[in-house]
Image (tube, rainbow, N blue to C red):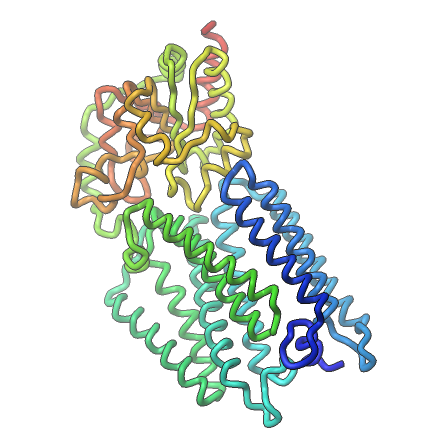
Length: 493
């Protein structure tokens, strides 16, 4: 049985429809939808993961049975199937080892790395289809690629290449191999617009001329624009970048699904692409920024270092773990605000122990999560879930912001930009307009920070540090939380 016939039979393309394959892909698609629904909440995330795993298993097995190399009699080619299974096994071992060893603090860069692999896979599939279109069933008798397939191929290779190079830059920024600050190239807007226009024009021309120079020029320009788009974006915009690249990887997979004639890839890619786009919109709204403004340049692009330097000379109130333990043990309500500093110090378990101690003394403890706290969407939720923090104690910004005025203590651990009042008061600030957690309204603010010399990713100082009701707890976040737990345990409260 020819490869084209196999594709057609499995997906309803040019030959007879295999109803069992169609039903299997439909079931897989439903499970993927249920997975997304489950992943929308920490409380249902585990069941969502199970749905996703089940859907992917069905999709992979169905694809193997319908797309695997076959002998002339239509039976599976054992040698080809073994090669496929070996490749799957190698990938599974790598994935399991990485999942077991990766620290939660490194999860954002791991996600970026995975996105790059999805993009590179789309480029590889598009290149294989271009070099051997007959095997993919997308060419006529003369070897000319169908016009529709050229469009799909052009989109797939462009989106895949952008996803790959953009994700590599995001990984380097998140991993500290490249500066997290925006890197502004002269004339970047003209260069970017010109490159994007060239890609669109060449993709349109590719429908009329499938010459190698057209295909490979689109590929090269797409790799370049992915690099150019991400390097000007600062670290504070990384949650948007991660969700945006997630969306790109989905659309690349969907485009390649059309090229391969694989319904499961089309469904899965469309789900990932659309959900990533929606998440990007949510992230942008959480920062009161448009998607275009994020792409055009990152937070902190125009912020000068001298501004933060002048504020560091203002008086501030130092405190100790014992002071913090006493103040919180006497409180009725404590709202904890975690940030990336907590993730870096891996302080989530010590923080939960601190909260448990306070709850034993009758203190009401809640957690306030900003949508863009951390380096990827849901970063803080993942860390708190890892520490077994009860889901009903974790609240999003819009659900808890009004409670700070009634809170006795706001305990901020490693969060700067998302609590900075400059977002409301300073029109010249790069974070102006971003909704923040109103920790300044609490009766007492305990702010855990490594030192007074540093600023957040946005590059601006925080007026909360210098308020009369603020006590600065300087040092490693995990050690500070551990010391507070010891003070609470030994104080007799």
